[in-house]
Amino acid sequence: MRILVRGAGVAGLAMAFELVTRGVDVLVCEAGPRVGSGASWFAGGMLAPWCERESAEAAVVELGRLSADWWDAALPGLVQRHGTLVVAPPRDAAELGRFASRTDGFDRVDGDVIATLEPDLEGRFRQGLFFTEEAHLDPRAALSRLHGRLVEAGVRFLFDGEQPAAAFDHVIDCTGMAARNVLSALRGVRGELLYLETQDVRLSRPVRLLHPRIPLYVVPRGDGRFMVGATMIESDDRGPVTARSLMELLNAAYTLHPAFGEARVVETGAGVRPAFTDNLPSIERSGNAIYLNGFHRHGFLLAPAMAKRVADMIGKTETAHARDRERAIA
Ligand SMILES: Cc1cc2nc3c(=O)[nH]c(=O)nc-3n(C[C@H](O)[C@H](O)[C@H](O)COP(=O)(O)OP(=O)(O)OC[C@H]3O[C@@H](n4cnc5c(N)ncnc54)[C@H](O)[C@@H]3O)c2cc1C
Image 1 (tube, rainbow, N blue to C red):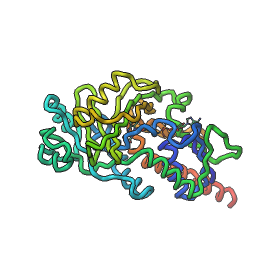
Image 2: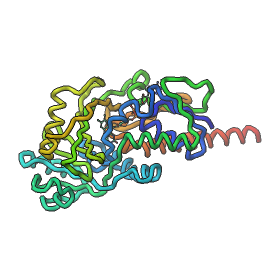
Image 3: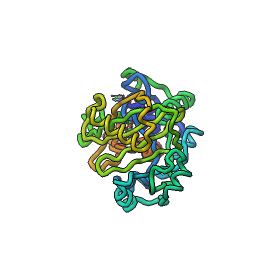
Image 4: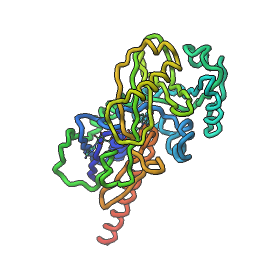
């Protein structure tokens, strides 16, 4: 069986991985010059289904709880299983109660435990929530390592919009926002972020800072680099970060630790999350084309489970076709 995957973001690469491990001949066709030319490049890389439940459906926990195992199996050593720490400055302490009432899978922690988990936050927060089972990864490393593994496994890639000449049994479209001309319900949710560099703060895990209006997070990337994200704006504008968002992001980092005030801003950026009205991913079929899209805030978290579903679906269709052919011959 030959399958064309359109789009080399996290959805397309996870899809290609699921197919090639089942023995399928896969070609990936990407409009951009490299893997991760869309929203995936800007992700925080948090595998945080229990935290995300605060604003997401229960399906996000069901589909996402095993994603860290999938990434571990695909790319050993990439996933960091240190949990997620959620804190709020004293003036926003009520936000912790609200967050706790909408989630589970956490331990309530006091200032001493916070200091044990993250020594650099000693004395800064009196209470927090610790989601022990959560994990994170570096999304850019994940994309580039997955690309490498796929090439090793025999998957071919075309970049810069080069089109394949051959015909395919199935085409799986994982083009994110670009599929909006077909998937009319798709909308964009802009996420702005920045990268800071400092040797004066050490964190072992993503730390979410609650705020009544704009909750943000800081994810350590190692070697003194931190990703600070992310805004949630109903827009498909990929343009540069606005001054207001930049101030909000820097404020969050500074509130978490004042040493971020001396950090270097090494990158700012904005990605557009492809989302449907329920903010859940979906699989749509039209002839031999399958659309896998709508990952919203959860591409790295949910692409593994959704790609498995699509691969199973194709497997069943092919088995049914093979049975029909056998019957016709008999
Ligand atoms: C700031 C930010 C933070 C985030 N943090 C997290 C997080 O912590 N955890 C998490 O799980 N998710 C997170 N997300 C969400 C995640 O990044 C998205 O859900 C995910 O990237 C969507 O992946 P995708 O492959 O569907 O789309 P994309 O990454 O946009 O990939 C689509 C690809 O298709 C290509 N393409 C377009 N048109 C064509 C065409 N005609 N032919 C071929 N290729 C084409 C594009 O160039 C692109 O490379 C975050 C997103 C943002 C913006």
